[in-house]
Structures are given as structure tokens and as C-alpha cells.
Length: 169
Ligand code: AR6
Image (cartoon, helix red, strand yellow):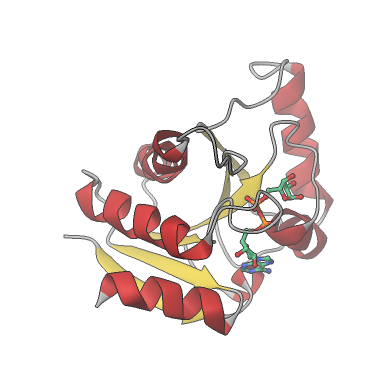
């Protein structure tokens, strides 16, 4: 059984085996949680991302997939980068968002990670409504077959925290 914990705060301050990054397919950094992870984690993360782009992800990491790098100076062993879908009001992309959580946990299992911190993927720059993003996150983690013992959702603000709390209760 995977325990779900909710924390309000900055994910780059967490101590876990793996921190999940809401990246973009370039893997070369950006704003939001991605920017914060690269800033605090230091250049070792970007170095490995560049190597991934030069090898198996020449065209970038596709939406819904996940890949791991070092966590650099963060208090974690790995950063798992995943690319959420951009919100669309005309097309249902929820399977891609669910895939981000599932694939990140699959990568965590491959690495032997037992504690994993997630941000609310796609709910910032990518515009996904927070309540729906929280529902998909919690439902997908609950349904996942994983050896991860603790999934910690780290929510940046109170609104996001309350959205997740509404689905975990
Ligand atoms: N800790 C935890 N959560 C955070 C932090 C933090 N330090 N900073 C922001 N959030 P976003 P996306 C929350 O925009 O929507 C980047 O430029 C934020 O409040 O980081 O998946 C990438 O490079 C929101 O709830 O990611 C991509 O281009 C959630 O994290 C694009 O943004 C996700 O917001 C990805 O957009």
C-alpha cells in the first residue's frame, strides 16, 4: 500500500528518494517548479538532461513519459522529469496527465525509490484546472501498482493544497 501525504511548500526543500519535475519536452529547463529544481539542484541536473537529449531523447521527452537524472544538490537521489499535457478545453488530455504520474512511479520502481515527491503537474504554466489536476493525480497514484511506499504531493499554495485535500479525504 502506498501512503499518500500532502505538504504545502516548496518541493526543492523536501528530503525523499526522488523528486518529480514538471518539465517540458526540451528537458533543458523552464519556469515554475522546473526552474526552481534546476536552480537549487545545480548544473549537474542540466548536464544529464543535455546528455539525454544527445542520446535517447534527441527529439525531446514526449508528453506523458518520464526519465530520471541525478538530483544534484537537492536532498534526493534522483529527479524524475515528466512532461505534462497543456490544458485544452476542447480535447480530453487526462490520460496523458495520468500517464505522467504512472510513468514517474514506474521509473521510481526501476530505481528502487521508496519515497517520491510530486508537484501538481500541468496546473501552473500549462493551465490545468487545479481541482481536476488534483483528482487525476490522487486517483492515478491510488490505482498504481508500485513498490513506492510514500507519495508526497508538495503543493505550492493553499489553494492547491486544499484541492488535493478534497480528494485524499
Ligand atoms: N514547489 C512545488 N510546487 C511548485 C513550485 C515549487 N517550488 N513552483 C511551482 N509550483 P508549473 P506545469 C507549482 O508551471 O504547469 C515550466 O516552465 C505550481 O504552483 O511548474 O506542468 C516547464 O519548463 C503549479 O501548481 O508546471 C514547462 O515549460 C505546479 O507546481 C511548464 O512550466 C505546476 O506548475 C510546465 O508547466
